[in-house]
Image 1 (cartoon, helix red, strand yellow):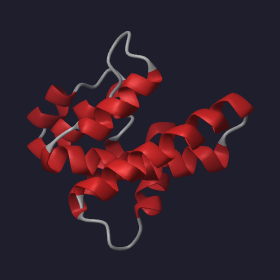
Image 2 (spheres, one colour):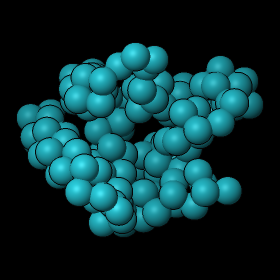
Image 3 (cartoon, helix red, strand yellow):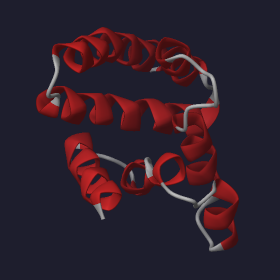
Image 4 (cartoon, one colour):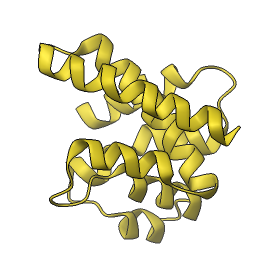
Length: 123
């Protein structure tokens, strides 16, 4: 339940002009990381392939450092990469506002401008 509640918060943080692909990705963005569901499970249930690709981008790989994960999101190409960056930006804003430790606040504050810069370059 918390995965979906957080996903809704991130969806709201995208703003009113967000496209449906970004909103759907935001709702689902932690499902693969935080549950037994895979992107293949979602794809097999009819979730759009671009959303599934964005979810793959947004899911940290095993052994991947946090900063390598953020850099991978920033470098991802295509509509899925753009969607992943939009969702990660909103996610970082939500997480930054709710961070309960200085370590997490610093992590999010350091990552947010990287994602925002990648978004600006892509546009």
